[in-house]
Length: 267
Image (tube, rainbow, N blue to C red; front, side, top):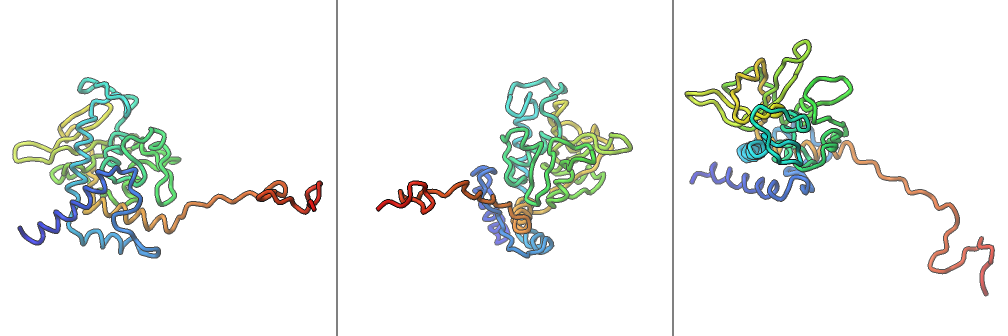
């Protein structure tokens, strides 16, 4: 067994332990960035480690293939291949697969839908992870992938697609994003890459169906990258602390009357 292979196994084991414990329960990042650490330094640190993408990608695809035909995020009633899923649409499906792999800090795959609609990320921004279309009043799923640094838009490169990557279709007004799916299988010598998607329900569907499209590729060590980003952003954007309210009147402590008590001090 080579040293590189042993290192990869060790890194994968760390990620397995964290992810299998449940993404919502992750109390801290896999790589804790110290206050003042730059994004570039954190990214360089993550990229210098053995690539742990393989595990994140497996978890994403496993989630997608188990939920491709669900009626809603909390309703496993199956719909037929190609049927509509108005209560569980494309962006939500991909976002939940990402969350299942620990790629959306603080959000789990079984979180309520409203938590995806108003996801407050570590950078303080609120994202609508149910949305792939471009609407000026919302930060959509694409914005989250870019801001967190886990997704890299490499353009129209279907041959480069790997399981767990994301496919964004551009059939909206003026060539804007209109649909999103998750790559389930890479291309082979005899066939193109395949995609799982929602609304309508698709399992291992041909990549060409989603043209014109861009491939958004997971960056190397995406899991480590996103938690390093989360730690750095939380240092920059600490949660506001509640201001204690002053008592409306002097309080008696431990049964000792206040000097302002109308009854006066007792002798």
